[in-house]
Every structure is written in structure tokens, then in C-alpha cells.
Length: 322
Length: 228
Image (cartoon, rainbow over all chains, first blue to last red; front, side, top):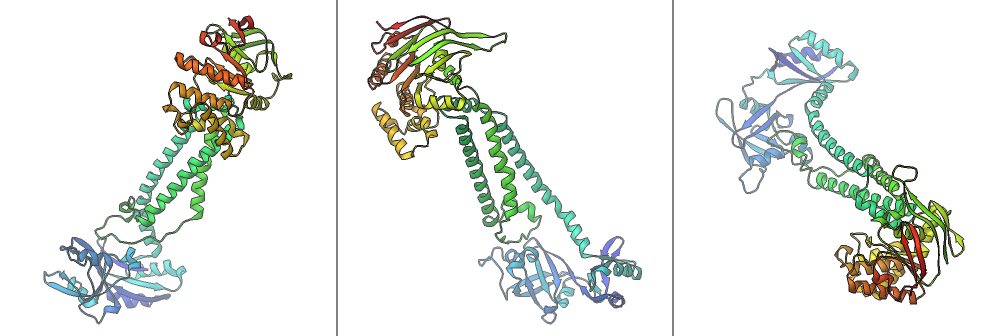
């Protein structure tokens, strides 16, 4: 649970004096103050997320950075990225320069959440931002029994009416509300593709072209049975739809896992200067592939047979009359 | 022998646009002979040819093929007879575009399930016989009129039919190509094929290849006899 303090409806710094009384509430396992914020780096034109980290408490002047920060901060440098012992200069709230030495990079695998992150000591953080000691950005509560969360939250608001407890579920709900529109954009693209498929299938189902009818007439005239023609049309439809399906799946696989979803990337990753440079782990869902198969290949194959069946039952002498 | 008894074919029966295409047709056609159906456009030649070739059923009357009554056979058996007994050469050639000359020739034999290599060999032999081996891999839309017709002839012969049916075969050919066509028919006749040709082209029905001439007008046979 996160505890924020609200002043005039906006989040404000929370006094660390709140910690001990909250700790006394039954069920609360621990309460930790958190210091974090955003820093706009005019040199690289990027926004960084700054957090304090307990591991750096005694390592004043040192920072650990995410790989997005490393790449962005090194723009124009031959190496292309910042390395250990490089200096990253910060402009503090009073205009002075605070040079901090890079002492580590956050692992590549956590890039999706840590690309723009900079970890530093509490001392450096307070030098960078005008946050007096005795104040934190927010408090993090650990509660042993999740069933007690709402009770504890109401006790905290009774104790400190200017606080706002935020449960993890609420954060997830907010994220969903904030990011669901991206799913909506993809849904629109998918709807367009499905509409195109339905129109194509409908066009196939409602009739054959004059040339196709003529071909069927010729085949009947030269001795093909209706079943021979239907079988041929079935294999033709199956070959076309299966080939399309496999080419589509292959292109989708290459697009997502080799090209890192280059077409959808800007929509799915959202706005940011520091896009994570992550590689998706190849994974194929048999359930999804099977669903797609039965939604596309099977109906298309069946649909191609219907008009052929109607045409294949015509008299073969129709071709004699041109 | 093919016998036709009181054959009548009506299109759009019991409708305001009812049309009697042929009526009161009685005809006997001997095997291993060449018969020409002549007459002006609309005289019923093509309709009669369609019925003879088991491509259409008569509205009334009976057809016997080698003493077997075929008029009442189900569609499946008619198709089988059409495939095994008749080779058809259409007026418009009716080749399937997008396929090669060789592929078009093989089409009627696919339902027989013959081994592809053997079928391919037979089709090539037919194209070779018709001086078309060099065009085997050419798409049919690129063939000249004469080449397209020879492809159509090869296709008609692929199932080694006893009877060849040709509907206005010289309609789209010049004099030389028409003469070539009749020479091919002569060769096939000498091989023992029965040939039925519907044509109002004198180059066809006055050719010495023709044994029997059936003259039609307004859907009826007006004369039938041996070629002079």
C-alpha cells in the first residue's frame, strides 16, 4: 500500500513523523519512506525517474542508471552508451551542478520498467531537489494479511485525514484505464483486418467470376464430375487459405520477435523520450493460433466451395453455347 | 452405332420464352465413319451435338450408344461416358487460361487417377503428333488460333475416345488452318475414330473426309445420306 499526502487535492510531500503512528496500527508489518521524482535533463532532452536506493545510502556521489539513460546520456559519444565511472552532471534546484559517477547499470532484462531510472543516495537526492529531511515523497506499507488492507486504509485516513492510501489493485486499475486505449487502437486495426476478411469471404461466397464459371463448365464438359470439381475447389481454397495463414503467422512472428513489433511499437509503448530497447521473448500460443486457424482457414475454405457447388451443378452443354 | 429416336429438346419449357431447339430427330450414326451436321445458324446443330455427346439430355426421345440406352442414366454415369467415349472440340476452343498447353491437354484425364508421369508422357506424345511439342510449356493465351485448336484436339484425344465431336471447328480458322484441321480429322478417321462435326463451312462438309451428311433446318433433319 502506498500512502500519499494530499494538499488542495494534489500530492504533496509527506512528513516522516507519520511513520511511527501508522506502524502502530495492528496488521502493519513495515512502513518505509520513499523519495522519488522526475528530473528533466536539458542536455539530453529526456525525463529521468530518480529514486533513492538503500544500497547506495553510504555511497554518496554514485548512481546506478537504467540502460535508456545510458544510451540517451551518451548521444554523440563514440561508445554510444555511458559506462561505469562516467560522470553524469545534474543541475540542482538552486542552479548548481552536481556531478554523479555512474557505478552500475540496471540489468537489461528489467529495461521495460527501468529504462529511464536513476538510483542514488538519499543525500544526493536531497541535494538535487529541495526536499527537507523529515519529508518523503510517499510511504510504502507492507501488510501481512491482504484481507486487512481496506481496514488498515480506513484507519490511516482516520488518523491522518490529509492522506490517501492507494492499494496495489487501485494502481493496476488506474494503469488499465490509462493504457487500455492502446489496446483499443490495436482492436481498431484488428477490426479493419477482420472487416476486410469478411468482405473478401462474402465476395467469394456470393458468386464466381464469369471466368471461373466458364472453367467449371469446361471441366464438366470434358468429363469431370461435380465431386471432382468440388474436391479441386476445396484443395484450391485450402491451399490459398493455408498458405495465407502460414505466411501471415510467419510475418507476424518476424514482425513481433525479430522486428520488435516495429509497426505497433509507438502505440504500445506509449509516449516517452526513453523508449525501452527490449527484445520480446519468442512465445507462440497454440490456443491463439488454433483460434485464428478456425476463424479464417476453415470458413474461407468452406465459403469457396459453396458457389462452386452451385456452378458445378449446371449443365455441361452451357460451354457449347459460349 | 449411335441411334437417336424421336429426339426433342425444348428450352425454357412452359415459360413464355419456350423454344423448341430440335424436334423429331431420328438418326443412326455408324462407328468409324465421319458425319457432318450442316445447316444454317440456329438450325439445331450444336444442340444435337450436345445431346449426342451426353452433355445435355433431350426433353423426350431415346439415345442408344452401342445398344445401351443412355438417356435415362444418372448424371454420374453420363459424365463417365462423356469422359471415356467422347472427345470434344469446342467452337471457342475453351482452353483454360493461365495453364500451359500441356496442362490443358491433361485436364480430362485427371479424374481417372492415372500416374502423372505416364499422363504427362501421353499428353506430350499427342502434342508431338500435332506438331505442338515446342509449345507444350506455353500458356494457352499466347498460342495462335491454329495452335490453340491443335491443343484443343490433343485435349479431346487424351482419354483415347472412340468418338470425336467438333462444333464449328473451322469458324475461327483461315483456309490453310481449316485444311490442316481436316487433314488431322482424316488421320484420326484412319486410326478408326468416329467423328461428328457440326459445321456450315463447305470446306468441312464438302471434304472427302466426310462420309455422311446430315442437313438440318429449323431444328429438324431435312436430309441425311452418304457424302457424294
